[in-house]
Length: 355
Image (cartoon, rainbow, N blue to C red; front, side):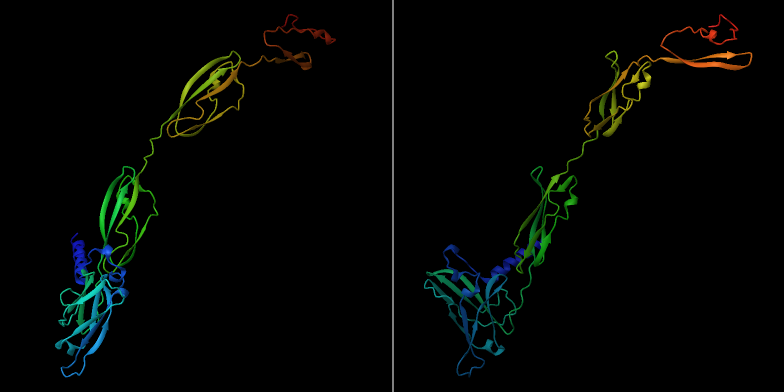
């Protein structure tokens, strides 16, 4: 802050040095404004190098901008400072409402535009009212270069979520062009830049003036992700034969994609799956919602199936099979007897009652 105050003091001093007193600016024509030195008058100086000079020498001096303000600076030989110097005002623009009143010249050998070592002033009048005063410096050296003055820019980090300022600082910049980026954005926990590519190009003049006095970087609160929640799916095993639910359970699933298969079908004795390949793909969102809240695996009572029995007639005398046939039997109890024994001539049943 001390540095900023010093810069402001220097800038105020520069304004004082120029002695530009603009009164009623809206009434002053362009020819009297201090922003365009081409409209300002030329000062013609008359000086002598010796007291014996038959006639004074002359030097035309035009205004220069110093610290943004008009200054007249004339370089004269050292001998001229010990003799009288006078000046004449030559207007650059003819305007009957504008008149000039130069002061008497007190020759001082100036070394800087300091507001103290000036040798004369030129008052500008509009319709008899003073509107500006310009200083004249005399020196044995050329006008020294301006001392650059740093400029200040207010850098603000703004929370657009809550419409409040998170931080605001004055940043000192040297004369020249500067690109300001939100390099402090990471300091604000829980926030992110609305536009990570946001930047400003700020130009600082030698007198410390800036073209963008304040830059604002917008931040927004970071949306915290919700804690993942498990979802629930109702798994039903359904008996399509008797049109009844055999079992129904709520199954908990973590967020993500899951393939559900009828892995409990074997628990239901006397049933078989209608489609052994049946499965469901269930997706669970982070908030626990599921895209398929209920899955059904269909079971049925198997249809009756015939059985098969091999019936063999065996020759025990010669230890060989006389005949062997597969007999199909319907579900149930069946009594098999050697009803075909008579077909084998020369043989008799070892046990006629065998069944």
